[in-house]
Image 1 (cartoon, helix red, strand yellow):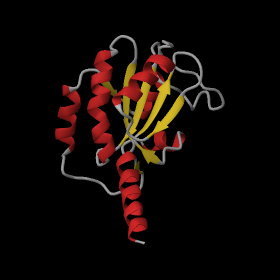
Image 2 (cartoon, helix red, strand yellow):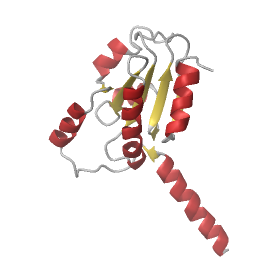
Image 3 (cartoon, one colour):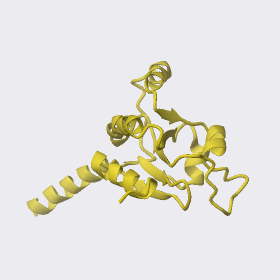
Length: 163
């Protein structure tokens, strides 16, 4: 009985650290001004609004039945929230990858609380959720904070077509 309870607790902790549910509370420890300053310090990851997403990634209003990528480089779109622990762990890894693959891919971030319509359009129910978009073909979705090695493999094989 004790082993079952322990196993349940361990599994619950793993589930929480892998992905945050979209209905969790908010963390107001950082002001928007601090967050905006941190965003300006990052040079390779691009934060998008809905309008920018429609222009740079996919205009689902114009093409609701067919995926048509608007970009000229493969991309990763990170759906995140500022209060999400796994999202915070993933952010510096995405920064590193954006710099490492500069000129080859684009890394976008979408704050699900500031852009709820985008989250709803893609059925985002758990964060972080990553959308991997090749230059041609359909995108793939991954949920949870992936390790850097897995992200690199996805970039090299799926986005850049390297074997």
